[in-house]
Amino acid sequence: MLAGTEQFMPDIDIAALERLETLIGGDRGALIELIGTFLEETDEILADMRGAVACEERAVLHRGAHSLKSSAQDFGADELAVQAATLESRSAAEWPADAGGDVDRLAEAFAASRASLQRWLAEQDA
Amino acid sequence: MSESSQTRPTARVLVVDDQSVQRAKLGAAVTALGHEVLTAGGGAQALTMMREQTFDLVLLDLLMPDVDGFDVMQFMQRDKRMRGTPVIVVSALESDMSAVVRAVEMGAEDVLPKSFDRVLLSARLASVLERRRHRWRERDERQQLERLTDAAMLLEHQPLRASALGLQATCERTDPIGALARVFVQLSEAVQARDARVQLQIDRVRTLGLAVAVALTLGLIVPLARFARLEGGSAGAVFAGATSLVALFALTRLLWRGGTTRPLSGLARDAAWLAVSAGGVGLFPLIWLAGHAPAATLAVLLPAELLGVLLLGALLKRRLPTARHGAALLVGLLALAAIGSPVGATALGLSPAMIALALLSTVGCAVAVHAWPRTAGQAASGSADAHAVIGLAAAMVSALALPFVAGELAALLDTPASVLLLVLLGASLSAGVSLRSDLIDQAGATLTAAATIGLSLATIAWSALLLHERLPLFALLPLAGFAACALLVVSGQVARSGSLTLHPDAQLD
Image 1 (cartoon, each protein chain N blue to C red):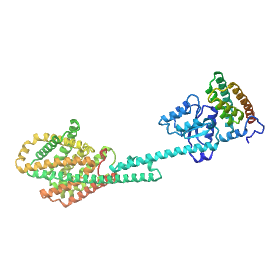
Image 2 (cartoon, each protein chain N blue to C red):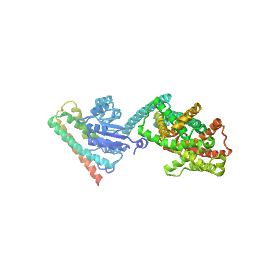
Image 3 (cartoon, chains in turn blue, red):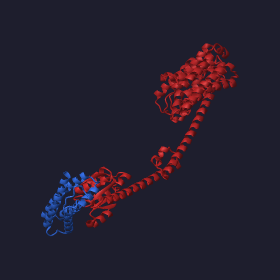
């Protein structure tokens, strides 16, 4: 168990964070830094995807979904990962119906995960 | 630190991913395995880095904007330097299977899923790096084997220096290839050592042969000069006649055999120096003395030339002679003292003035030997130059002497026997001086001067044969002294270089 994860965090798979920490050599500081990067970059990817929806740029939408899927799995954001995978497959060949709605749902899932991750980060500071 | 980082050498890994978080995760994971990691945020940056640096492995994301993973692999295949660097593509296998297949077709060595764990990453890296090391080893072995076969072919056709075989690195190997290389190098060294020994023997025989030839030819000078003097020839006439013939022989030979390599001014300067030292100071007093003392007795004084050369060497270098040369000088001076002592002078029948004149003659010869313009290492052209110098020097002294002794020379040449005598004298002088110049080139001034003990013995022998002279028993004492002096010098040279031959760029000794 990661220290400081006693509190229930519904939108994050703590086991995934544990795996990630092991993967990078058990360095808690590096993990915290990595979470920060994930939160920042996901914001950027979502912004790019919103831009892609406005201009109907399928490649950007698809690549964004692809990126979010992998990263979300790494940080235990399972709901975000599932939705990103769905959008990735739907946008693989053609423009998906209700792409804007899909991106909004991705953003909601990410917001929930972000709240959990930030709570976890705050516990690390404490 | 992982188990693999402790047992395997660190690799230099380039991580290429446009996503910062993936790049950071992969970088941290590879770093945690003990490798050195550099990262690139896109295909273009990765290619720039690979052009400037070398990597053992590239972890490459396929889906990137602008220059993607496929473009990077295509560039790498075209570039000779990057082609050998193995690539592991990083991909979400479940959605990218066709892309992965394409990447493998393009030369990717392995695939890593985006969600990988530590064990899988470690195994993939180890496997690819091991394959790479294996390829390098194979290539290295192939190259070293090629070097060995090249070396074998070289050795078959010509003996070479061991260092020229280029097998130093191969010799350090501990496997059979290394053993074979060491055998080759030892073989080459053995052949080289044998050649060096043979060359040393050849040089020794050549030097000794030259010394004997010099002794036999120049040894005739004093007995023939005495013969001519006893026939009634004046010192000046014999001197002028002999040197004229030397000039004639040398210059004829020069015209016959071809030109010199040095400018005339240089040759004339050396010739003037030789004319004064060997001709005026060396030869003329000896010919004069030959009219007043037995040739065999004069021969006892000839090795004093070695003392002159040793002293000149020490004086010109402005340092004390070596211990061995010091001892040689001491023994030689004792021999001289024995000659100059009242007992010695009486036994040999030499007045102090005669001894002084004979010594002056040896000093002249010593200066000539010491100042001889060396041409070691360029025998063919050097020989022509030597003959030019000898011919010019002889022409100079004979031209100076002839006007004063023309009448006397004409009188001397009245009888066929005297003509023959003079021709013999000129011929032996010409041949002897020429051989002596070769000896100086080959063995240096000091050893040439040491060989005057042989010249002395040859003179005594010729005197006995031609003039039926007998050497007073006392002469054995100074001769033994001079012989010991020469032996010290020769053994010193052998101890120092193992050779009786000068290195071409040796300094005047």
